[in-house]
Length: 327
Image (cartoon, rainbow, N blue to C red):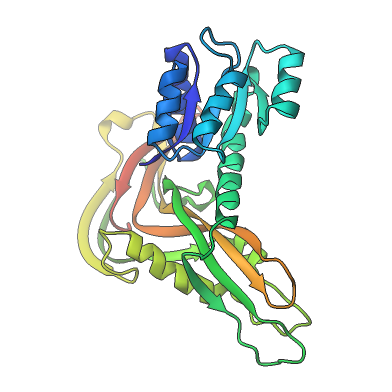
């Protein structure tokens, strides 16, 4: 994973812990430093897009370090994350030194979201300076030349944000066991790679000018499927399928005497991508950027057991992933 976020704190252990947290919260590559020289070198050698700086550090303040870092990369997005900065320092950071955000260390829960916002802003700013996009995804047909404009959707950037993502609303019970019950299942399944545009992103892509513009979602989705497929070196085709069979026996063991019933559940696993599109209209003036999220359906399921105990307690156990359906 490419390092794109930099954490700088003179307490190395604190920087390491924060880097781990941000890596999980955002899915981005994160690196950390505890001294200014290392921070500058990391920005010089890695495609760092967002830097999170402590203000009170012995060698240089966060404000001073931000100047050095932006000398190396003028487009760098910088967040002050501090627990000791004075109100005057915060004002200077936000108003005069060009910090993109200022957060107190007690607000760590907001940091992941703030970093991702600055990460997307960085991509948009850089994309505006790109003379040519990565490629055209879709051009709306002009069936009604008099009434409707022509809109062109082009790809500016595409990258994964979560390697393995499970939507908690998609857990399903596939086997329900009670005391003394035994389930024998002989299964055959087919898995399929697919890419879908997140519903909220679909709504953002739908344009309806005088009712004459064709819904672009399916066409753009097909183009992005091919692009994602090309990026996935281990996937020969986005439509690749694999068929397997398996026979399993499910029952409550003698060690589960306190368990009255067990729900064996599964949920689909996705890889999430973020795509940055340029939307150009030949009648609307300046192009705009549109960020959309893609869900790539992986050929595996997350599994878990939900046990209902005699005392009314419910306990959930994660049981890993399998490369097939239960049924």
